[in-house]
Length: 166
Image (cartoon, rainbow, N blue to C red):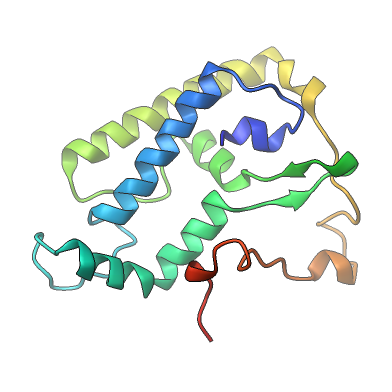
């Protein structure tokens, strides 16, 4: 889901949101099937079979944390809406993905996609059109010092296979 839809909960979906979603599907598959800066493959050859790669990725805490923070971040908004996407939004503002790929062609493609996303987001932000879709946060301000704001939020119930192991 696009960062704009997650950040502006009342925003209707448009073609740009669907194209952005493709970037995230591409990113998820790269993280799953290719060597990247979050890999823990060590001294393995470039030809690691998918079963071994899956096992290594399942044990990779950095990759698990990135996945949760990037793809599953959510928090309650007013009127029953759900927000998220801050990590996506930050990477778009920076114009780059949160990881690099060992394959130069795939890395260039990913870099070009984030460059396009940044140009689009810059244009949309300068128009001011998104403010009409803003929904405030529900409950305590997450930046306050209240105990409720400091309570950890767990998404482990959504993807138990990816949940940290004790």
